[in-house]
Length: 373
Image (cartoon, rainbow, N blue to C red; front, side, top):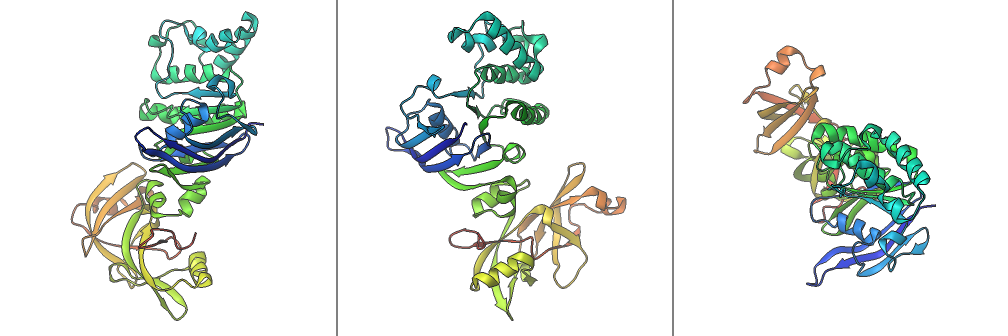
């Protein structure tokens, strides 16, 4: 078993700055949990408290049911992979991976078996006699992971391990970490500021802001039903469009009224509003760019003017202004457009857009909480 439990964990620095507020989380055995949020949100500090590299100001951290607050990092049964790799430049790849095993006074036969097995899994066997300076960034990261692998730790902690790599290598290493997780079959806690990494790697995502947990959920849950405006805007690329408008109730049906249109809230969301008897009120309406369609002029369509178009290959990102000057982003697949339609997407073009009533996200204008969570 390799469960991790944080109960009322706080980190307060000497100048009374609170970096992490009352953090509560249970991580199950063999679960892959990602802490994500903007710089300074407390995610790395929380990871370092689990590792024992930061003192815990209040609360408890348990690994396998044992409180580890007062244990040294080496005694916690964890292995950590850092952002900067932290390899010894004067040692070969083999010796870097073997270093912790030699500290544990393992026999050279055991060390050889563990190092060569890890190298084979990570595809770095041919580099074992090289020094780190002779490796690419991605290869160095594999060495750092290999060094953690051989320790047979209960929990893997990874602190922004891909942030120093270029975009192509990050994509490749994300896939390799998924495969590695399948082979190791252990508990992972992974920190990143990149929501794409969080969505592709995690069983559950912990979204943080200013030292607080904003939401914990599966990738589907945080994308489809964000608890609050911060999560809604943080998860998804391009980010969700947010518009101030009103929620109105007429004849037992709920409508929103952005830009002079009147759009019914339909499907499960309309049913849930009626079930909860939500009163008419000012709201913040959220619509993801991929849920907005180009359409013909009509009763529920919204006229707008194209300002900028970004060609992304398989899709276009259209930045449009509504009649009142509100800027929206529309994400539309290029395969669904004819060559003539694509050619017409130039600055100043007049367009009409629409979005479905079940694709909308509704947030209280005051609290910024989702009305349906």
